[in-house]
Image 1 (cartoon, rainbow, N blue to C red):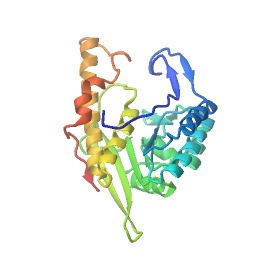
Image 2 (spheres, rainbow, N blue to C red):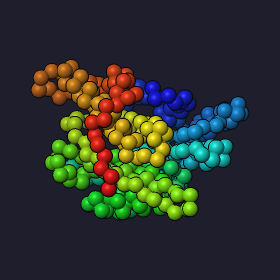
Image 3 (spheres, one colour):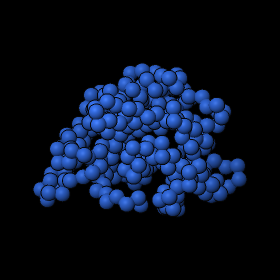
Image 4 (cartoon, rainbow, N blue to C red):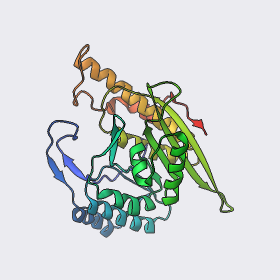
Amino acid sequence: VLGFEIDAVNSVQFSNHTGYAHWSGQVLNSSELQELYEGLKLNGVNKYDYVLTGYTRDASFLSMVVDIVQELKQQNSRLVYVCDPVMGDKWDGEGRMYVPEDLLPVYREKVVPVADIITPNQFEAELLSGRKIRSQEEALAVMDVLHSMGPDTVVITSSDLPSPRGSDYLIALGSQRTRRPDGSTVTQRIRMEMRKVDAVFVGTGDLFAAMLLAWTHKHPDNLKVACEKTVSAMHHVLQRTIRCAQAQAGEGRKPSPAQLELRMVQSKKDIEDPEIVVQATVL
C-alpha cells in the first residue's frame, strides 16, 4: 500500500493467528528458508533495499536469517534491516517470554548487531540490554546500550512508564543516531503518548514495524515525523477495529478474537496518508 515491492517469506503457514483457541498449519524450518533464498540467488534477484523480520520461534531459523541478511548486505551495502525482536511482553507488570529462551542469545549476539532499526517493546528492550527500565532516564540509557550493539534507530514501541496524561496513556520512545560528515554522531530522542485501547489485538507489532520501515524510508533523517505517522496510522486502525468489533459483539459484550482482527483493508486511506493525531516530543 505504501509503494514497496515485496517478496514475502512465510515463516509459518497457519489457518489463523495464534490468538485464537485453535490453529493448525506448517512451520518453515531453516533449511527450507535456505532453499527459498538459493532460488532467488540462482535467478540473480537477491537484490533488496530492505529486510523486515518479526516473530520467529526457532533459533536455527533465526541464525539463517542473519546469514541471509549479511549476504544481502554484501550485495547492497545500503540495505536496511528492520528487526522486530519478538520475544515476549509484560502482563500486570510481570515480563514473560512467549518464544523459547534460547532465542535471546541469538538476538543479542547475532541479530541485533546486523540490524539497522529495531522495534522492541519495553520487556524486549530490557532482555536485549540486560537492564531494567523504571524511568525515562533508564529507558534512554537502555536505548544507548542498544545503539552500541549496532542499530542506529531504536524505537521502544510500548512501555509501562507513567504518563503525565494519566493511566489511559502509554509511552513510546525513539532514538536515532546519525553520523555527521566529520565522523561524530548526533542522537535525536523522541517520546510519544498514545491512548490505550482496552482490548487484546494481534498483529499490532507487525503493523508498527512495517509502517515504521516505510515512513523512515520517506523521512530518513526525521524520526519524529516517521514515528508520528506510524503511531497516528496505528491509532486510526485500532480505533476502527475496536469500533467495528464492539458493533459486532453487541452492547456490553466482549469482542472475540475474530471480531478483533485488525481492520487493515478498511483503513487503507489512513495507512497511505495518516492524519497526525499523535505529536512526538523531542527530548
